[in-house]
Length: 223
Image (tube, rainbow, N blue to C red; front, side, top):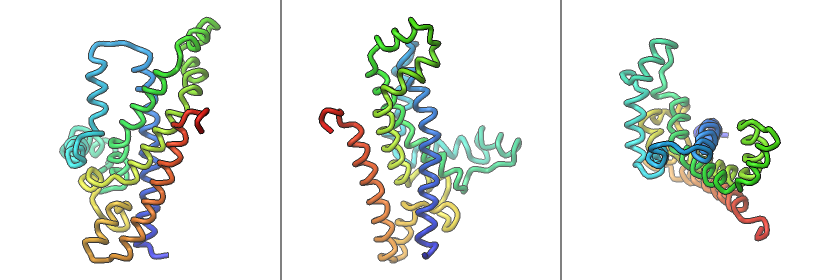
């Protein structure tokens, strides 16, 4: 199969999987913190963490360049300490996709955990469960459907990420060109057949993900 078609598909799946996994870890942990604790500025922090949902992708890309670029604080430290550069790499695409997909998991996890009745958590504590065990044995299983649905939405969002990825990872064929970037390049080059094939792949994948996510969010008695 033509690598012009195959590589963007493979890279998009890899980037989306790693980005979703990263967002899942941080999103669920922060969702638990927001569910479990009260602290000053809680809702303001929630708004800041949710910003990638509403900010233009180019703005997110700019922030990432400022942070991870060669002259950025984190970027300079990575370069000087480990010799690692994230700009114009597929790893940079993972970071961009993780940033834009993170709020979907965070908001879903917080809502799902807030939906867990306190009596179950309190019952576990009376049995001597430490907080980490209450989280793993009680909250996660009960909130699992909501978290999984948010995770699938985040995966679909990561698959379709364009603006922030273009700014931090570039559009390098065979290196950093994801599905959405390949569609853009094919359209610009007049390769309508290739663009149509790529569009079909991403459309089918995202439709399937959204369908499964919707099934997960449907109450069991309505399923």
